[in-house]
Structure formats: C-alpha cells, structure tokens
Amino acid sequence: MTIEAHLATLEKKHVALEEELHAAVNRPSAEDQTIAEIKRRKLRIKDEIERLRSSSH
Image (cartoon, rainbow, N blue to C red):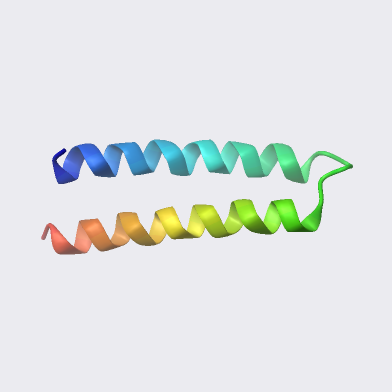
C-alpha cells in the first residue's frame, strides 16, 4: 500500500470516527467513557496522518 493510499484510508476512518463521535454526543444515554474512547481513537489516527505526511515530504 502506498503512503497516499494509507493516508486516504486513515482520513476515511477519521471522518467515520467524527460522525460516530457526533452521534454519541447527541445520544442522551452516551457514556463519557465511550465518548472519550472515540476521541482517543480519532486522535491516534490524526497523529498517524500527520506522521505520514511529515515523513513523505
């Protein structure tokens, strides 16, 4: 898999997690722990995206 393809995959996952986070925040029954886990996963993907972008330049 090329770096560009990997970045595209990570960006899709990041968008999906953003949508999941938005849905969880708007659910009255959403637990803080669930929201925090989604945010952590999203941040890990963002960090990976930034690392790949900086290493490809």
